Length: 473
Image 1 (cartoon, rainbow, N blue to C red):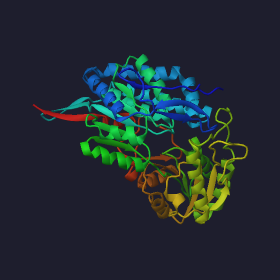
Image 2 (image 1 turned 180 degrees about the vertical axis):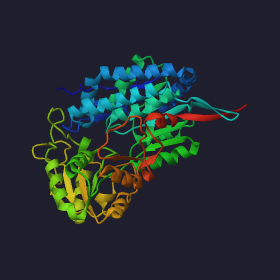
Image 3 (image 1 turned 120 degrees about the vertical axis):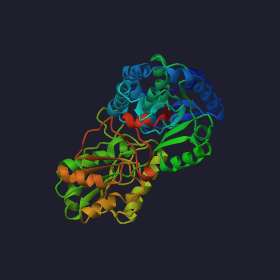
Image 4 (image 1 turned 90 degrees about the vertical axis):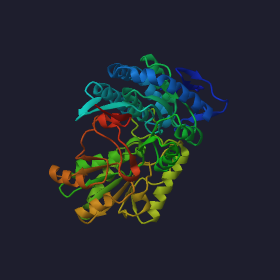
């Protein structure tokens, strides 16, 4: 399987390619260190140009019937599916996702999300009557979207689809680590009949392009997915123009195993939720909370499950875990593993260093047992394939540990169904799965506390991109 040929890509502004200022950012394949493409290092002037295009396109797109907007989003979903293999190969090359995962989750989730929003438009309550007031839901305006590298297509479609259904226009900055899929998406939107200027892409760094988008007075809303640190900065900058800010930030989810859980099922799911995408998932469950009396038994099950996660070249069909997104990130993850051991955790699987025979940004899937709940590896987002097993004394202790981090994005609870549901209600997280429940594209996703604010998916996600007007009669 071949990587995309090295190429230079321009910004997408007003429905056409716009050349950069001359400076470029290399896109590196983390498995090989090879530069596979270059994108322009955008400037505030490019952001101004994109905002002007989005502002000009807004009145026409906002006036378009929601059914027609939904039809365009449906065609975008179909266009993405038609280019699925190209997208999969591109994502594997730019951020190291195993090709099998790129063909399933990396393309499957965004297509499902786009389809779900297209279907939602028909029955959505665009207006309602409350007493003598007509309540009207209208597009918010120009949206600035900034996304990370771990799910490069999923993260933007989760913002673009509801924004388009709402009648908004958009200026989008993809991560400079994995920006290539953005160009494919731009071409798909044009082929789907999206008017020029409704969707614009400006490449560049957060310090330059991200700051310019956040501060721009003609951008009405910022939708950001990424680190809590970056989210704080965006909130601060955006506050100067009092624009709406929706943040989907970091996480430190827990798998809570109750005394009456099916341990084999729970441990298998918990290990998968810690290691998927090499642990580079904000909604991962990197903490496994276990009854102290069964700690050693569960460790054995977790080690056996972890052994199934082969690390290898991401273009190999049998690889389950590819490299991390960059060598810099690999060193960060190694540092956390070393710190966890120094703080008293027991290394029972994996450890720091690359897997034997691999030279790229590869990390070894790792399990640390007997972890103290207040230690750095239990409190801070590692964003790598590191599972920490934490013993608890009783159910109240388990809930307290689960709620003890600054995050509150996702978690899972395993046990007798009603028992597990009762515990799930006590967790301070925006999304809690009981006994490995299936993902629901219509259910809201978002965080408590420093995992962010706002919600994605379903009608909850659509409402983020709308203003609410009250007309008294």
